[in-house]
Image 1: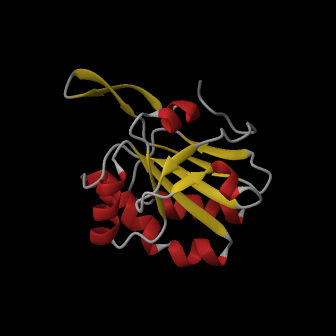
Image 2: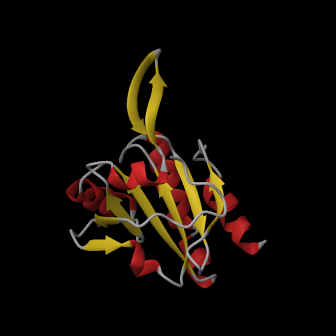
Amino acid sequence: MAISEGDKEPKFEAQDSDGKTVKSSDYAGKRHVIYFYPKNFTPGCTIQADEFSVNLAKFKKAGIEIIGVSPDDSASHKKFCNKMGVKYTLLADTDHTVSKGFGVWGTKKFMGKEHMGVIRSTFLVDEKGLVFKVFPKVKPAGHAAEVLDCFKS
């Protein structure tokens, strides 16, 4: 079941890059971005993480938290954060529970073959916990600036 604009953000719980449990309730009353990506250290995911990192000060100044979610484990996220200088939360969704909750775990095609995976997507959530913007099938380059612009509107 995909999440649509106007829906309540699904509840979630997952481990961050330090192995700490992070819950959706930790973001109650806060504007935030939750973006889903397939895998650490791949070209598109590296671009996306870097662009959110480059714009992090602008997001923080606007009072917006950033959360990245992938099927990678906490140890992989720790290495990715250290190498890429990621200073925002990355969540390990190794059992795909969070991705399924947002409706972004599904069938993908790559080189003519189908497989299950994360469909790169982003959700913008307001202070009331409502999703006010959904970006399905995201193109990584330029996406962080596009997200920031949506919060300015």
